[in-house]
Length: 325
Length: 256
Image (cartoon, rainbow over all chains, first blue to last red; front, side, top):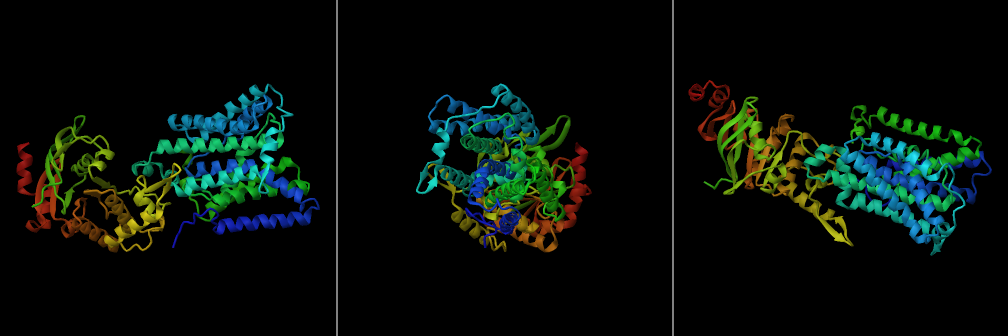
C-alpha cells in the first residue's frame, strides 16, 4: 500500500475537507447575496486566484523545505514594474511575458544569496529584502502609478486555443512542472529531506546549498510569472502592489496542509487553499463586509489553522525551528 | 584467514595537548564482527571517527584493501566503502523507506533533460535487500517515521549496503532499543557479516558483544589494551581489561 499519495491530483482527508469548505462557502454566499452565484462572479474569483496560486506554489516549496519568503508581494511588484515598463516601451508581448519570470528568478537568486550564503534565517532575510524592495518600488515608480498600459499582454494571454485561453495552459503547465519537480525527481526528495532536517540531509549527501538556491529561484520565477498575469489583468502597477500577498500565500498554503515546519506539502491542498481564501474574500465583499476586513479574515484563518494543528498534536511547538533556515 | 579489508597502523590523535588516541594497530577483516569496547573517553569514538573520515589522524596510517588512504571527509571514507551508522540515524522520517535507502544517490532516467526517479526499480531493490536481511518490513513505501527504532536501524543498514559498503561501523546501535528490538538488530549485525561485510560494533553491553562479535578489542585511556577472539576469552577477563584491573593492563600503564 502506498502511504504517500503523490499523484497529480491526489487528495486526502485534508483536501476533501477544504473542497467541502469551498462548496459550503459558495452555498452560504449564494443564499446571502443575489450577486454571488453568477458566471461573471465565478470568473472574477478565478481571475483573482491566478497570482495567488502561482505564488502559493512557490511558497509551498519554500515552506516544505523549511524556508519562507515574506517578500513575495514586493518581488511581484518589482517584476510587474519590469513587465509594465517593457510593455509600455512597445516590446513584443510574447517577450514581455518572459520579463516577469526572469526578474522573479533573479530576485530569487538574490534572496538565496542573502539567506544561504549570508546564513541569515529565511524569515529575517526576506523581511529585510521586503523593506529594501518596497522603497525600490517607490523610487522606480517615482511616486506615481504605472497605468494605462497597452493591451498586448492581455490579448495574448486571453487568446483561446481549443476553447481555453493561453493563460489556462500556462497555469496548468506551471502546476505540472511543480508536481514533476516535487514528486518525480530527486530534487523533490531532497527538498523534503531538508525540510525534515537540514543536518540529516547533509549527512545523507544531499547538495543542500544547491537545493536551497534552486528552490528560492523557482519560487522567484513563479512570483515573477504571477507579475506577468497581474499586469495583463489590471494593466497598471500601483505603489502598494502586493501588500497582502505574503500573508495570503502563507495562509493559503498552510490551509492546504503544507507544514509550516517543513517536510510535508500538498499541491492540491495549495490550489484549494487559494480558492477557499479567494472565495471567502470575494463573498464577504459581496455581502457587504468592507475590503479593509479581508486581511483580518486571512490572518485569523492562518492563526486558527496553526493553533488547531498544535492543539490537535499534529505539530509540536517545540519543533518550531524554521526561523533557522 | 581472509586478507584484512582495513589495516590501521600506529594511529594517534591529539587535540592540542590532549592525547585522545595513541599508537593503535588494528586489522578489520571481511565477514567478521569486531567489537570495540571501552569506558567513556577510552578513545573508541575518536577511533571510529578517524575510520569514518570525520577526523584526520595526527599520526599513523590507514590501509584499505592494500592501498594507503587519507580521508579528508566522510565522503572520502564512503567512496572507499566505509559506511558509518551513527546513533542518531541520519534518516528522513517524512520520506519512505526506499526513498531513504536511495537518498542522495537516487536511480533516475533522463527524459528531455528532466531526471525522473525510477521508483519501481528502487522499490524492487529495497524490497530484496529487506528480504535478504530478513528485516520483517513488508512495505518499502512506508514512511520511516512510522517505524520502530529497530526497524530504523534496519533501514540504515540497508542504506549502507546499498552504498556498497564493505565496512559498516555501527555506533551503539542497540543503545535506545527494547529487548526484542535489540535481538533483531544483533541478528542483522550477524547477517551483515555473513554477507561478507566487515562490521565494527561499538557497544557498552558486554553480554551483547559476546553474543555477536568474532573478535573483541578493548580501548583504555586512548590505547588498545587487549585484542581477543571471542572463543578465547570470557566476560570477566574483558571487564578487567576495561577497568584496568587486569595485570597486563597494569604492567602496560606502569611503563608509561
